[in-house]
Structures are given as C-alpha cells and as structure tokens.
Image (cartoon, rainbow, N blue to C red):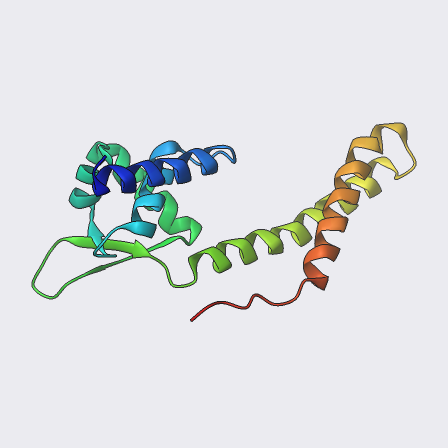
Length: 150
C-alpha cells in the first residue's frame, strides 16, 4: 500500500466517523484530506483528484465545511484559483459553537415546558430533553479550558 493510499484510507476513516453525525461522506473525506495533506492548502482540483469526488459535489461540500467553520480559503496574487485549508483552531471553534447551541436549546425546552405545563404527561419528552441538555451545559460549564499544544 502506497503512502497516498494510506492517507486516503485515513481520510475515509474520518469521513465514516463524521457520517455518524450526519456529515455527508464527501465533506468528511475533504475534511480528513485537508487535515493530513501536504501542502496544507489545496485547490478544489487537487482535492477532487485526491479523494475522487466530482467538482460539482465538491463545491457544495467545500461551502458546507466553510460555513461550519472548518475551512478557510484564499487566492494568491495573480491567480484565480481558490485554495482551501483547515481553519485555525477549527475543532475548538466548531465545538464551542455546538456548546453555545446547548444553551439555546435549553431556552427552547423551557419555552416548551411553559407552553404545555411542566407537570403535564405530554411534557415528559420535553423534560427528558431539557434534563439531558441541562446536564451537558453543566458539564461544559465545569470543564477546564482546553490546553492546546503549540
């Protein structure tokens, strides 16, 4: 197995892991590839060739990953080509955004409990969601700050 095959196999493992949470496989392959490729900046053509994706599907997945905060892009002076790379501290940014979403969902569950009455039988599903998200919020509130390697 060549080094390229090993790199692509690793990128595929990243894709399959992320697919469990609903990330499209091509987006996962792109992310895995950009985590491990050299050079770290790649054009859509280079990414397409490396992971074997069509340019059309690649474009929408690059847009998705950029919107999620995983990727940044730039052009080089005198070139029209766009180069993509992992955003600085991408994982921390994305996870912090998800943690902030926990508080937002707690507000929604509180509103739902107010709407149907917290003691009402039909509120049981809302109470379960609220308790779970409340627990997660407490875990993250009490977690030590991330110590990144530099």
